[in-house]
Amino acid sequence: EAERGVAELCAAAMVGNSRCLLVLLGLVATAQGWGSVLRRGVSLRGKSSVARMDGAYAPAAAKDIPISNSVSDPRAKKVLVLGGDGFCGWPTSLHLSDKGHEVIIVDNLSRRNIDTELGVSSLTPIATPQVRVDTWNKISGKEIRFINMDLAQDYDLFLQLLKQEQPDSIVHFAEQRAAPYSMKSSRHKRYTINNNVGATHNVLAAIVESGIDIHLVHLGTMGVYGYGNSGGEIPEGYIDVVLPGGREKRILHPAYPGSVYHTTKCLDALMFQFYVQNDQLRVTDLHQGIVWGTNTEQTSRDERLVNRFDYDGDYGTVLNRFLMQGALGIPLTVYGTGGQTRALIHVSDTARCIELAVNNPPKSGSPVEILNQVAETARVRDLAELVSEKTGTPLQYVTNPRKEAAENPLEVSNQKFKLLGLDPILLDSNEGLLEEVKSIADKYKDRCDVNAVVSKSYWNRDRAAAAGENSKVDLGSLAKQG
Image (cartoon, rainbow, N blue to C red; front, side, top):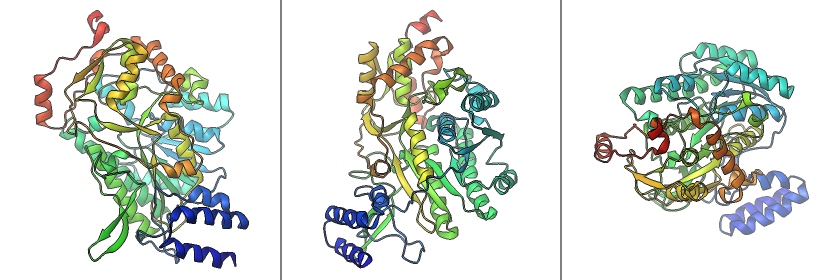
């Protein structure tokens, strides 16, 4: 009776009100004892595609019920964290380990090598990978292992690793993550494409060849959607369209990359679509906003666990860059008008979201599960003014090195993670975290190279010429002392 009732309700949803349906489904689900799964899985705004009843992949019709394809699986797992030495990868590795998962970090230390190339280093003094891992293992009583491997080059070694370790999940951070770095020169563009796309494809191919049922969690970017191109709220991965002849379909949201780095994430998304359809891999793609903050509860336990803090013009994320500049008295460098609206998330929430994704994998045969990993949106100049009010540091508007709209709206759905239980950190309710970042910047200000603050990566010749005509940037009293 209950199953027939649910079927009738589903049919009613095709012509009825989906919010009413959610309430009714909840009542039926509660009676059947699986209401908690539905509450986690249903999204009214962030709609995801659905699988056919036979388990085969098919783009969903726009009227299909928007139920997530994930299922709760909170057991402890063996997790490979690819790129686990990086800004997001390291705190996530510790968080997963702290929650009881067996973690193996795989990283080729390319981010540390790029520091050497650029002549800058993390504002915080980060320990070597081995010291980091040994410290965590001693103070936590748990065990993380570290393996130095280049995923874009060492395919056979990675395949052997999968067969040997038989992981339940792979968390994939192992890509060059900075848009400005990807635009510095033809060499940097080619490296970003070869490294990012090569690494992602090797991971997918190795999972298929291994024959192991591994859930892949990939850290993507909100930049795949572009900014201000949707004409409204950005859904979670898929968008409803009407094709010629009035055919309603749900398709992957069109890609509008704004850099070579963002282009690699769009290419990743297409590869996921292919491998999920062709080989029935289980893939979760997380479209993340700009990350701010430095430490998490785990990285704060010992100085040797401290996370990296990038402040330079290539790798420094906008809010962290402003907080560092404010602490050091460098007038805040706002690109263009500062009217660019961006999605934000604290690094602690990055780790929590990865944990939620690992614990809620998509069902076998389901389409790629896409979630928008964001807490809030804000205009760049508003962020600068917030930091200016806290530090007394003035703003300076500089020529934008990027080719992008001077102003853009941005409204994003993040209902899936909220339904999974995320209560995100927001700027207006967490002044203490802003102060924590500022205090770290003040503590390590002697390690700052003020000349690295200004971006020297231009999107094209016109942007470089414009910057040359208006090249004066005030680097504050530290530059004068130097």
